[in-house]
Length: 274
Length: 327
Image 1: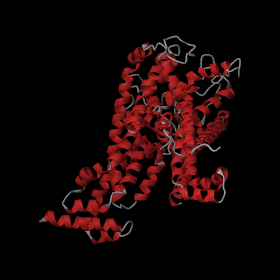
Image 2: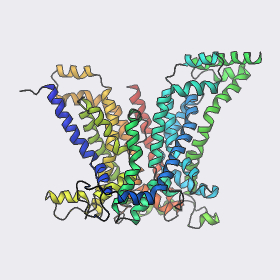
Image 3: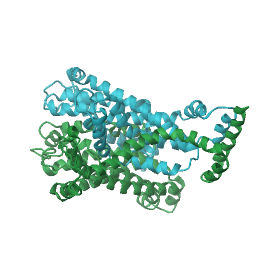
Image 4: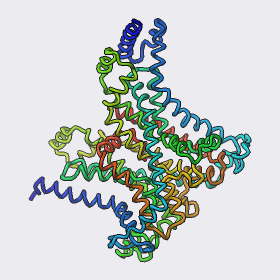
C-alpha cells in the first residue's frame, strides 16, 4: 500500500523537526545551562527546573557595559558601512563609470582578505593615531566586513532600477544628490535593510578586531567579554552561559523580525560565510 | 538661463552614459569640457568608499609585506625601531617545525570542515527541496547556528564537550558507548576532531541555504522528464540535480575554503590552539606571533601565506561565480 502524499508530507515534517531539534540542541543547552544554579558543575539536568536567574544577575553586572559597547559599535558600523556603500553602489550601478568592473572586482577580492592581515597593520597604525581602545577605531575596523558586502548587495539591486525613472526625475530638474536621496534610497529599502542586518551581525559577532585592537577593558565588546570570562570564571558557568544567551539576542531577534532579509542575504552568494 | 542650459547638457550626458556602457568616454570628454566636470561629480559618489577600502584593505596588504621584512620586538611600538632584516623572517618561520605542523593542521581542519558541511548541507537542502508543512519555518530556524557569534557557539560547545562535566560525554556514558568518556578537548587527536565538528555545525546552515537556492533554480520539468524515462531518485540526482547544481557547488566550496582557512574565533575559544599545539593553524599561529609574542614581522610572514592562499581561491571563486552566472 502506497502512503498517501499528505501522509508522506507529514512524515517529512516529523523528520524535519527531529533534524532541527538535533541542530538546535546546542542553543537549547546554552539556554538551559544559563538557568541552572551556580556551581552546578554536573550540568546534566535536562531542564532548568526551577529556573535560576542568578547567572543573569551576575552576567548583567559584569558584562552589561560590554553589551552596550557592542551595540554602539554595531550601530556605528551599520551607519558607516551603509553611508559609504550606498552612494558607491548607486554610482557603480547607474553611472557607467569607466573602471566600474575593476572596482567591483576589487570589492569582491577585499572579501577574501583575512582579518588577521588587516589587524596586523591596523595595530601599528592605531598605536600611532591613538585609536586603540576606542569606539571609533573598532567601528572603522569592523566596517571592513560590512562595507564590501553592502556594496555588492546594493549594487546588484540598484542595477535593476530602470534608468528611465531616474532620467525622468532628472528632466524634472532634480539634482544627482536629490535623485539619490529621495528616489534611489527609498526604492532600495529592502536591499538596504538586508545590508544593515548583516553589517550589524558581522560587527556584533566580531572577535578578532576586539581582541587585537583593544588592550584595556575600557572599550570591550561582548565577544571579548565572553572570552575573558572563559579564562577567569570557569566555575560560574551559569553566568558565562547567561552572557552568551544575551549575546545571541540580536541574531534571534533579527531572524524573527527580518527573516526574509536574512534569507535573501544568505542566498545572495555574495555573503562571506561568517 | 544658466541653470536651464546646464540641465540640458546634463540630460544629454545622462542619455549618453545610459546607452553606451563602456564606449565613448574619451571621445565625449575630448569634445566637451563639461563632461569632465560631471564625470568628477559622479566619481564623488564612489570616492569615500574607495578611499575607505584603500585605507583598510590596500594599506594593510602593503604594510604586511613591508612588515614581513622587518624585525619587530615588544619594544618596537615605543621606540619605533623595526630594522630591515631581509628574508630572515621568512627563513625562520617557514623552516620551523611548527610551520609544517600548522600547515598540516590547517589542511585537515579545512578539508574536514568543508567535506562535512557540504555533504550534510546538501543532504539538508535535498530534504527541504520538497515542500511539506512547516518546511519554510524549519528552514529559516536552521539558519540560527550560522548567525550566532562564533564566540558564543565556541563557548557553548566547549561547555558541552567538557570531558568531565559536558553533556556529550554524559550521553555517551548513559548510552554505555564509552565508560570513561572521550577526551574531546584534552586529547591531541580528539581536539582537532572536536573543532572540525564544531565548524561543521556552524557551516551546515550556510551550505544548506545556498544549495537549496540552487536546487530551486532547477526546472521541475526536467525531473518529470527523467521520471518518465524511468529514472529513480538516485538516477535523477545523478543525471539532473548534480550536473545542474555544479556551478553553485563550486561557489559554496570555494567560499567555504576561503572562510575556513582563516578561522580563528572557534579555535581560540574552544582549545586555544592546544593541547600541545594540536589545533594550531596558520591563522592562529599568525595571531600568536603578532599579538602574543609581538613578533609582528614573523606574524606578517604567516599572514602573507594566508593572503596568497586566499587570493588564489578568490580567483577560483570569480571563475566559479562567472560560470554560475552564465550557465
